[in-house]
Image (cartoon, rainbow, N blue to C red; front, side, top):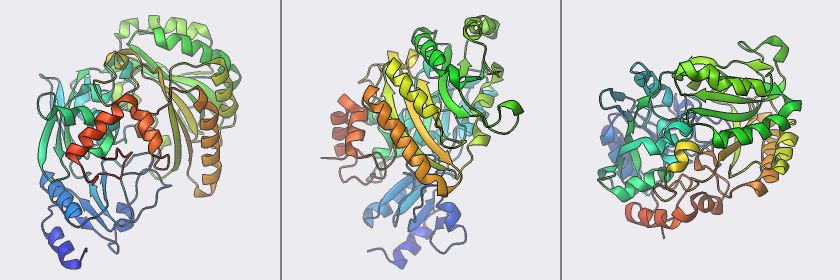
Length: 459
């Protein structure tokens, strides 16, 4: 049983700070990105280094404490926090070491993608990541990693070279193609089920100035836009990526006033090819239909990554649903339009992220990520600053999902799953790879210490 003496001893042996209920910053420390999540942990260990992580894992195991791991704190279901247990907060382990000659970056488990982009961009390099720079490196990577560069350079896990991991027994190991290769396989898509990753080493690619940004159309043109988009993306060169979105235009610069608060559809483009060919590449795109807004042009990679940060600050209420799709049928498009026209709040949205191109050329059993043959990862998110609107955004999100799910490929990107969707959704999201993940879980975490996640239960 947990007692004050054991807590005092634990605290004395940490280089980082141990935060408890009653501390002045406890309420701030327990907040995560999703304001809908309210958990009250017994202890929050701000881990300064790997030694702190090892001590924290051992303390949780020895005291039979529920254990949550928090990297950037962005997880959709708020799974970086728990009630009454111990939270290992990796935020202090924040560093990015770039090897420009070897084109690699080693990144601390507490980094967010903005930290990585800042460090790599000066060398004209990047690795595939997400769409918002405040997203945590650890969570996004372990779930797979879909982003602007996915069609060109694959998922984030396809660019992971190695990881440093603290296991459930407190042992520190490296996972790579050559060391603990089964663990390395599982980490690439299997989430936080297998240990605490304290650092990641990524392959970097020459990425500097992209040609990208949003191109928005009237909502009345959605059918034409989606039908054109579904034909364009599967056959597009890897250099060209763009995700489809329903959105409400924010009432703020740089958006023109006549579009403020207007519901629209659009594509947010990212072209990684040489700038000399960008205008030529976009000629047929612009010729298809004149957009109501065209903000597509040369843009530094970090600027594209941070474009939506101001509109999605931490603390908003979020409710998510997600699926993979192999195709966009006419019937599915009709359902998209029905719910896109009924966006509940200014922040609510639906995105279709293309996951073909380079990502589809990795074998479905080469990593834990199973849906290599899917064309899109869809996410539906009800978002609002006001908790009073939670019922409204949750019901819209669930209804939208229920209408589209029959057209889906079956599973979903685990980073987009909420915490209340059940074991069957997790199994479907891993598909044929699930049984192998269970075997690896049995080996590295047989007692399921790491279970505050999209859990793969040991047998």
